[in-house]
Every structure is written in structure tokens, then in C-alpha cells.
Image (cartoon, rainbow, N blue to C red; front, side, top):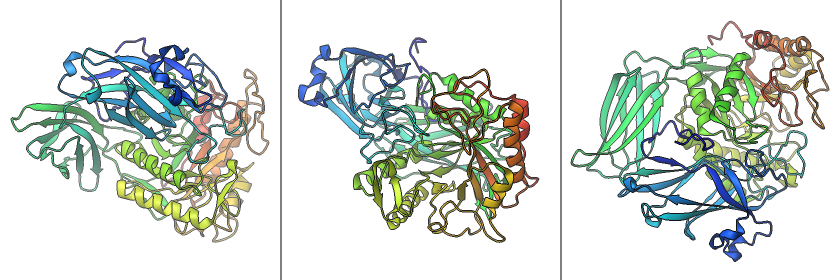
Length: 598
């Protein structure tokens, strides 16, 4: 792949066909469509209307896009030429999009090839019947983004013109890699890889583009180049292959060991027609009583809130190194994982988390969406389904968290910014549906209904947000009186019932070193503004020690990894410069109770 193409690394490391792919990032023709008249004007037929150039996969609001226009954008068009290699003849040509915010309509030579709804989920279209090898074709993408509608998840994108509070610069249109690959018509579509630590086995559940009962799939599992298991299954619509792994090497933060996988499909004549490479980690994450367990050993979660924003790319990391580096920064500070906050992170981030032994909670950008809208409900459910299916093979992902701070008053309020409210019963039904869907797709991880307020009848995890100025106040909140546990919205949340008690947000101390500058409206929590690295780390250490010694706490998540625009309460600045020496910070963060193995 050419080095001058931005984000030129292979995007999907758990399902690799690197021998037959083409990266479509780079310069595309571009046009804003402020009047939303592009369809009426048939803009795809008029290249002269594409009066700008954009650097894909960076959103037009970002500096890296080459445009950097910050105002609301509801309709944009992209266009470029594509040419299918001659060697792809006879195979299906699949066009992939990492993510387009929010809806996408894709045309080949003016004819619609497919549409997709969902600003963060990956999607693809089979364009074989619309392209001819070695012929130039025109690819057009129309993206629409109605951020203030209440029908779509926006996460931390600002619903006002300017950034404010904990809402930041918006992302519109293509913001992850666009690419093509050539696949046999009977090749693999996807494959769930489910490790079973207790049984020393791993289960493969493949899906095929067009199942052919006469074909077969062969799976080879290897460890450091040595084959440890292999087997063959049919390529029927419903098939499963279970392989025994003798003396499995378990994946954990101290030893993130990964098994390599080769999956090949052969036809009735035993001719190989598809080859996909993957990997998995032998690990188990579950709940017993009020503790989290990793590989059947209790673990105390020392997490950090990561919002996945970048100064020059916004939602899009400038390069693959930046994705890896953020994890390395977190580990260097003493954290053993992260809550991936109000954003669906790209697959390459999860790949590096797998490689580095970094535990994460996958979260949907739920802010901005209202369950009073049937359209919003359908959008949310469909995109959440796609997220779970895409990321369930990653050993680093240990829990699913679809919602965040879902109630700010006595009524259900997912769309507070837009004044759309519904009943608490609507909320409970909504969460129950999400839990049912998630557990049917993946029953191997805990379902964490919402981070902080408001939990439903009997949540698997009881999480709270506890921004307190000192350890005494924090402990008084966690255990307000004997036999009781702190809750964010006591009038509507159920009583604590013995689950893991997870302080899922705390800290948020605003410390800005003398060498840095204050952003406009810079803020942190509780009005605390340390004046030195020692004072800053002291605030953190006091509360980590209190929670370490608190028998009721199963883990915590500190706010936050980096500053983001005006919210300057990270342990690193927005440009990833440390605010305190890592050895000092690590000593405070790594405090854990004696019962935790990791």
C-alpha cells in the first residue's frame, strides 16, 4: 500500500484478506450541500459542482481533512474514480466503509449501490455487478447528518454552534477508512470466535456469503508458529467447529498472548477459494457476587475514561501510531483498561488493545437520542447490534455498555438537549430490549446497562458517577449509612443487590501545567485546580487509596485520559503531553486491594 495514503494500514485485523484489498483513502472531490438539493440537481453527474478537495478519512470539520469548517453540516458529497484490478475478475468486489456519520448513499456511475444508516457502525456493499475490471468508474458518496434531530446518537458532538461543557467539535461524513476487497462468491462473510477457558476449547461459528454444502472450511490454530489445533467443518448456513486447546495459554494484562488463526475454504474439487487470517485470546471475563473475574481470578478494575478525540482529526486518529500510543500512555500511567466513552472506537484500536493487554468497555454514543421516537429506537438497536457483532471477537473488550447518564430528572431523558422526554417505563422497556438483544448475540460478557444513572430493576453491574473533592466525601457517598450503597438517582434506581459496585466516573481534577495554556471555558470538577504535579497526583492518590481499602468497591474509572478541548481534566494534555511524571502517577493509580490478582 502506498505510504502517501493516509491511514494506509489494513483496517480489519481480525478478518484479514491482505492479499486482495485496495485502500481508497486520500484525496476525493468534495462538495457541501447546504440546501440539501444535491439529489434534485443530480450532483453526481456534474463533476464541476465538486468545488473542493478533502483528505479521506478525515471529517470536513477537522484540520487533517484540509477543510476545517466547523459549522453544522447536514449534507455533503464525495466523489472519486475507482478501477478494479484485472486479477479480481471472477470474484465478488466488496466496498467497505469503516464509518460514515450519519447516513450514507453510495452510487457507482450514478446508480445507487446501497444505503446505510448509522454514524459509527462499519458497513459494506457488493458492487460486483456495477463494475468492470480495468474500467474507470465514478464512486459517489452522499452523507447526511441531522445531529439535532434526536433520532441519532451523537455522543460528545456539540448540539450548539460552539463546543461547550463536555460537548466538542462535530464529525460529519466519512471518518474511517474506505476500502475494497475481492472475495469468492462462496467465501467467508464473518466468523464468531468464542474461547471457552473452562473447557480448554475454542468455538468457531462461520457465516458464508453464499453457503455451499459441498464446500468445506479448514481451521488451523497456531501459537508462535506451531500448530496447536485444527479441524474441518461444512460451509452450510448453520455450522460450528469446536477445537480443543491443550494447556491453553491464557490472555491477561500481564501476558496478552494471542493465538493465530488461518481459515481456508475449499470447493467440491478441494480447490482453495478463500483464505482469511485472524486471531483470538483465550480469556474469560465474568461476575461472581460483587467481584469481576478474569480467567476465574478476581480483578480490580483501574480504568480511565477515554473519549477518543484528537486535536487535528477529531474522531479520527491521525495515524495508526496514535491509536497504539494512547493505550501505551494509559498503561504507562498505571491504568489497566479504559471505558471507551460515548464513541464506537475503530477496529484498529481494539487490535492494539488485544496486543497490549488492555481491558475495555465498549460503549455506544447514546447522547442526543430519544426513545420517544420510533426511528431513534430502531437506529439505536440496529447500530448497537452491528457493534456487538463486529467487536465480539476482541479479548480486550470485556463488557458492553450501551448507555451513559440516561436520566437527569424524574423523567427518562436520553434527548435532554432537544427537550424530548418520555416515561420511565419507556426507558426500562428500552434497556430490557437492549439487554435481550446483546445477550443473544454474545453471552460471554457482562451487560452493563448504563454507566451511572439510571439502572433498571436488577442490573448486572451497579455503577455510579462520584465526582467528590476528597476521600471522606467519596466514601460517604459510596456507603451513606450502614448496609446502604450510594446511588445517583435514588428515587428511580433499584436498591443495590450485591452486584459489583463500580465507580465508573470520578476525579476530573483540572490541572493545567505552567507550560500549557487555558482553553476558553476550561473546567474540571468541584472547582479543584491543583498548582503542581505533586498536588495533582495527591488528589488522585487519596481517592484511589480510599477505594482500594473499601471492601464494597469492585473497580473504578478515572476521568479522564486526556484533555479534550475546553474540558481540561485529563492526566495528559490534549496533545498527549504528560501533566505529571509517569512514575509518580503510576504509584497512585496502581493501588489495588490484596484480593486482586491483576
